[in-house]
Image (cartoon, rainbow, N blue to C red; front, side, top):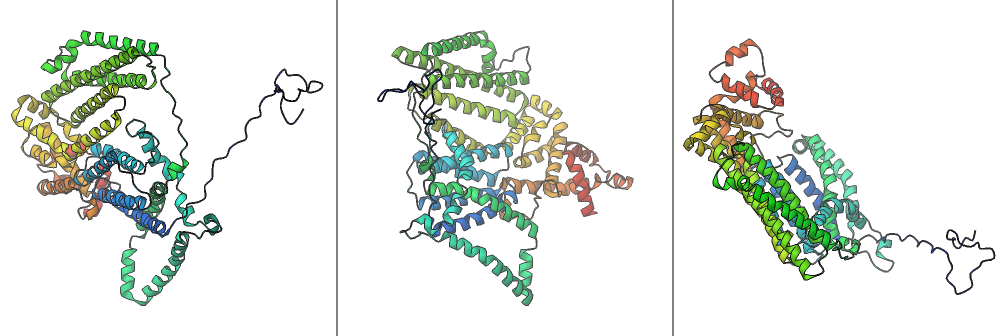
Length: 599
C-alpha cells in the first residue's frame, strides 16, 4: 500500500489506475496533526509576590486557628474573611487595574455584611447558607473587577464562573506561584534581566530554618529565662504542628486564584466561546407544550380553587388537619414551581421565535405559568400562616415562609426577563435573596421564635394547651433563644417547662463537659471565639446551674451506685431524668469523663 495516502473503500487499485495530475483523487483526507496546548513560560514574579507567599502562609495558619480551633461560627471567621478580603484586593489590584462594576461592589459589601453574622449569632441553619453566599459573592466580585469572567453576570451561568473560581482555579494554578518564584534566567530571556528574586528569598528562608533552630537551642541552654519562654511557646507542640500542616495545605489553594487574577492567567488561558444560536427547538412544538401546560394549570386552578384559596380566608378543609393541610400545600408548591421554572427556562433558552406572533405567544404562556407559580406560592404562604396561628411558630415554619418569599422573587425576576430580553434577572435574584438571608441572619430569629411562642402561651389558650403537650420547637433553636427559654423553664407548665429545663441543662453540658464538641469550648475563650449570643446564653445557663446544679446532674448520672442515688435524689431528680432522655446518646459517655475530673 502507498504510505502517502489511504484508499477509500471500494476505490480502484493503485496498480494501473493512477489519477491524472491536477485531478482530485478519490482518497480520504489525512487527519490533521494533533495540536498541542500552548505552553506559556512561567510568570516572572517580583519581591511583592515573595512577600505575599509568606503572608499567605502566615494567614493560612492564622485562619486554621481562628476558624477551626476557635469555634467555626464565631468572630474568628469574620476576622479571617475580612483580613483575607483586604489582602486579596491589595495583592491583585496592585498589579491588575480594576474595572469598576457596581454589581461587583454590591456583592463585596454583601459578603462583608454576611461575615459579620458569624460574630453575632450562632445559628447553623442560617450560617451555612451564608457561607455559600459569601463564597459566591467573593468569587464573582474578583472575577468581575478583573473582567476575567467567562459568562455574563446577569445570567444563571454565572454560577459556573463562581464554581470555576472556587473549585477549578485553586488546583489549576496551584503551581503557578511556585514556578514564578523559582523561574530561572532562561525563563526570563537571554537578553532580559530577571524581574524578581522571589525564588532566592524563599531559598534564603529554607536555609535560615536550621540556623535559627541551632541558635534557639544554644540560647535556651545558655539562658534560663529564654528557655522558659521557648518552652511556653512550644508547650503544645503537636497542636502547633497540626495548625502549621493544615496551613501549609491551605495557603497554596488560597494564593493560586489571587495569583492567577493578578497576572490575568484565566483570561490568557480561556478558550474563545463561540456564540451559537441556541434557539433551534421548533416553535410549533414549544408552543404546543406551553399551551398544554397552561391549560392543565388553568383547569387545575378552577378545580382546586377552594382548596388553594381557603387559606386566605382561614378556612380549614374538613378532611385535613392544619399540619397536613400546610405540608401538602408546601410540597405541591415546590414541585409545581420547579416544573414551571423549568418550562420557562427551557422555552426562553431554546425555542425558536421567528415571527412576532410566535414571540407574543411565547411571552403570553411563559408569563401565565410564572403568574400561576406566584399564586400557588402566595396560597402556600397563607396556609403556613394558618398553621402558625393554630400551633405556634417553629424554625422550620419560619424558614419555609422565607423560602416562599425567595421563590416569589425568582418568578418576578423571570416575568421581567420575559418582557425585557436584556434584563439581568440573575443579578436581581442574587442581590435580593442574599440581602434577605443576611437580614434574617441579623434578625435573631431563634429569639423571636421563642418570644412569639411565649407571648402566645400567655395570651392564646389554644396554643398554650398545645405547648403544654409539646414543646418540641425548642430542639431547633440555637443558644440565641436562651433568655426566653429560661422564661419557659421558670413560668410555664407541663411538657414545655420540662423541655425548657432540659434545653438549658443540655446547653450547660455543651459548654462545660469536655468532649461534647470535637474542639472543647470553655468559658476562658479567646477573642476569636467570641460570639454575642453564646456569651449571653453562657451567663444564663450559669445562673441556672447555680440554682439546679447541672454539674451535679452530670456527676450523678455518671454513676449507678446507691450512694450517689441517695445523695442526689432530691426534688430536682425528675428534671435531671428528663434532661438525660433529651440529651444526645454520646453525652452520657461524657458524663463519666466529667465525673472522673470532679470527684
